[in-house]
Image (cartoon, rainbow, N blue to C red; front, side, top):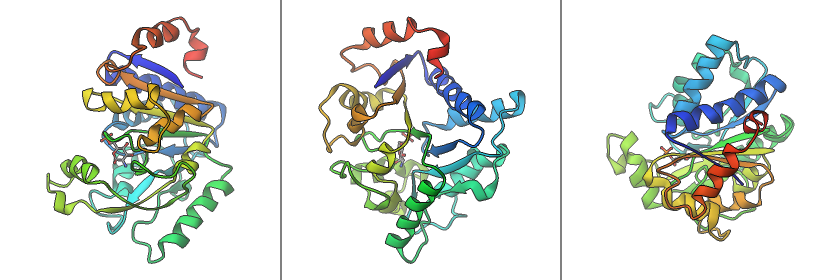
Length: 262
Ligand code: GLP
């Protein structure tokens, strides 16, 4: 795992955006895996800026989102579909037919999940997957004890995640759906690169366990230790519980520029 510690969320997000932008420039028909939550918002803002000011072209890019709540219409203000269109897709030149999110309103969840997996394969697989991390270490909505071999499927949120996400539902836990469709950990591990972002002290314990703890399904993100190309962009607050903090800094600072964006 490559650990990149930046002073704050802004500079961490911009550094992550440079990796995404470099891929899209080198491979205009790249397949991006995307995430929701508050963490990737600044990354998406930077991609929008690069599109507007530097002509970063998304016209041939395909996207697959990690997850979606079950039972929310696409138009629901808290659906991940709405989140993605509001915060990214409506502001770049992506082709709507190249955008994919799990269908939270499907009547046949297993069949819909199987189709999603097939669509990813048919698109050539995910080149770069953007990930946040839950305070309990979940990636996508793969909660603790999710199988490392899992594929896109239904999951039940933990009470912790329901409580964490209630802030998007007027602070009312009763409004947060308890079920979702999420790419599996196996699906995420198939991406050619995984790019995780985490900011703030609320993520410090999960980040330390992910990077330096044992690989365990109780900490789903720790599986990234087995990924051949996983980068973790964190701010100093999220890095504060890392034992090798100084080492990660020293490694990154000593890299040539071309390697920092690769
Ligand atoms: C949600 C999403 C995850 C996200 C996590 C953290 O549960 N399903 O993909 O990483 O929350 O959210 P935030 O970035 O708002 O802390």
